[in-house]
Length: 98
Image (cartoon, rainbow, N blue to C red; front, side, top):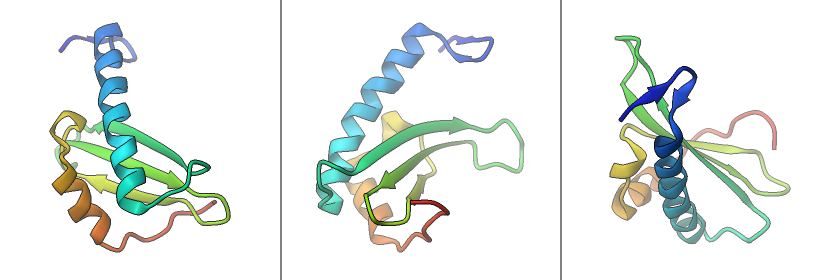
């Protein structure tokens, strides 16, 4: 994949958006979230050798609750329903805000 100066090029952004669109409804279903809940899905690539590499970060913002953050140590394209279920079964610590 070719990257632009500030991240992914047009084709990469479209693929990322498509993958996020695939993951969001699965998260909503698995957590039983209402339509009012906002879900953000992002792929983060860290070049630092101390980082785990590419990870998918999911933020769940449900009205009246603290924002919850979930991380998968994989690219969005590799995220499966089973991987999401395993991640969601782990008890993440709420982040500030919400």
